[in-house]
Length: 138
Image 1 (tube, rainbow, N blue to C red):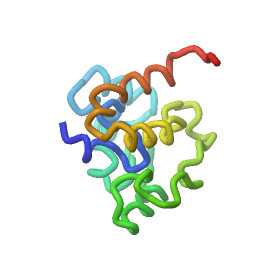
Image 2 (image 1 turned 120 degrees about the vertical axis):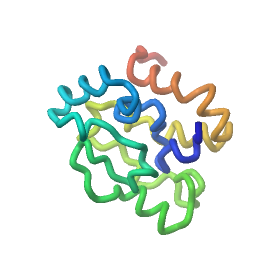
Image 3 (image 1 turned 90 degrees about the vertical axis):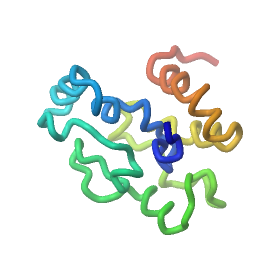
Image 4 (image 1 turned 90 degrees about the horizontal axis):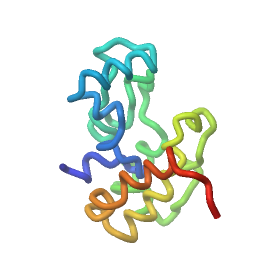
């Protein structure tokens, strides 16, 4: 797995995303079609970097601000930037129901601390599962 290519600049782990996994899983792709109300052909994504910062499955045809910023600055991840964290990583309410968008900064901090490969192989899935399914605790 090319984790550099399959991790979005904002810290999203594309390799664990249902839209990416739907490329090779027909049942999951059918579920994506139903969940988003889209055609079978659109119910996939190749990953942020391969899609140039867009997500066609949700009619996102322009690159997100994070992708534009990273491209302009010539960086791989937001955590490589001297302005990290910035408002481009703000946990917007319109994606709050999807949940996973709100753990970007945590992922980026782990990538910076652990390195991309170690994070991808040992933490990315558990971060996603904890965030989406875990119980709040102090």
